[in-house]
Image (cartoon, rainbow, N blue to C red; front, side, top):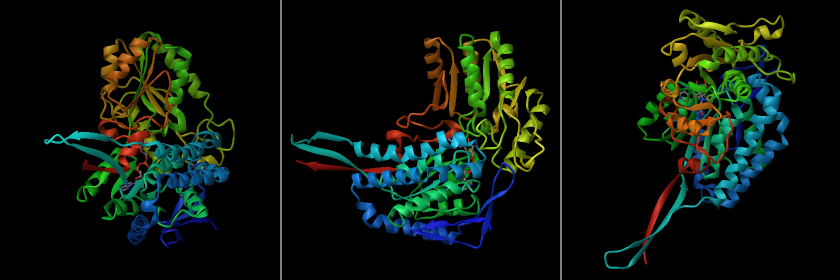
Length: 485
Ligand code: NAD
């Protein structure tokens, strides 16, 4: 009997007969049967959340709320290995990554916002009246109400908690939906909330799909006050249309087609290691991955050769094998999407430096959803493979001649999430960084995150910023109080 994953509504685990299969992408095995939340389940969750806001949670002092977040973090810590196992089972990622990145960040998100909320301040102004008296303006920060949080499959607990933690910290109630591909760690988080006795309705977890299913029911529901969404740009566009009638607040973290720029004066070995990492981490399934690599012509051939050697040394393996660098793609559908780009790249005239195929292992992995890490060269900037987000372990390396050219080509994208710059010339680094049309720029590093800093993209990569005080701004609203003295 496979495990059953239930919805968590108003402090109760609720089953349904409409279920879908949660698949292990390593070998196609079944992880669990998941209960799909119906429109009625969504309504029950929203009602429970509204009831929680009307109760003690809606008036709880900040310090007490912060304690609840620390208790959630403690609860994840106490079940650390369960969370690691859940992440590995759903995604096939190396266990090393789940232990060092995903689950620790889930814990850190709750601790960070618990601490931040205790020191968050608002504004205060003294105003002179026409008659020469004084008035005093001060602003109070209040919860938005009931937040719909919808997250993707690529970094399940990391991104789910990145929304749930600030929403709760600011005193909201949450109706949250993980991706249908990765329900397990969110289901565990519901268990943690239940075990620590978080008031019913404050945190609800629903499982299901997007369009015509749970996700759409959530965003359509009139009892939802705001939607925080991470996922594909076209899903963001669909959600925007859905929420338009209700004029709901949104925060969107969407796709990317990110550039890495390697200048001739870069520390060559560090740049190669950095670009291998930024192209293939999490099997290329990170919104921040570099799919467009621009390398100065003087080092281009050497760079491509070094990238090829390092990429071919990456181990595609079972998650529990400590030597594994690369896991599978999330699903057969996603494997097929990436494989379609392999085909398209050939049609568009690419030279396949390495990869470009589905590997054969001669073991259970042949039933999974694997693709080989892939490097292309020789495509024109107008190629679809260079304009559309593949979201797999692929990068294209192109030569450039001048700094101006590198800036123009890096910025020539409908997306604008992240850029990585590799150079030892600090003046060049800062000049180029400031000219990038992206929400994030890394210089001589990649993926290094300080939770206090703004995170988000421009153009098709998103709307708004989360992180640090930016999360405070999205997950709350202010009332200005003016008193004449
Ligand atoms: P997706 O858009 O297919 O799904 C994301 C979530 O939205 C899932 O929970 C899904 O069920 C739900 N959903 C889908 N359609 C919906 C609808 N019409 N209404 C409401 N909910 C709906 O994205 P994905 O394939 O899970 O994730 C990969 C994408 O996420 C990539 O484009 C990647 O770049 C992006 N991403 C962005 C960031 C960022 O911070 N900018 C981070 C991670 C991933």
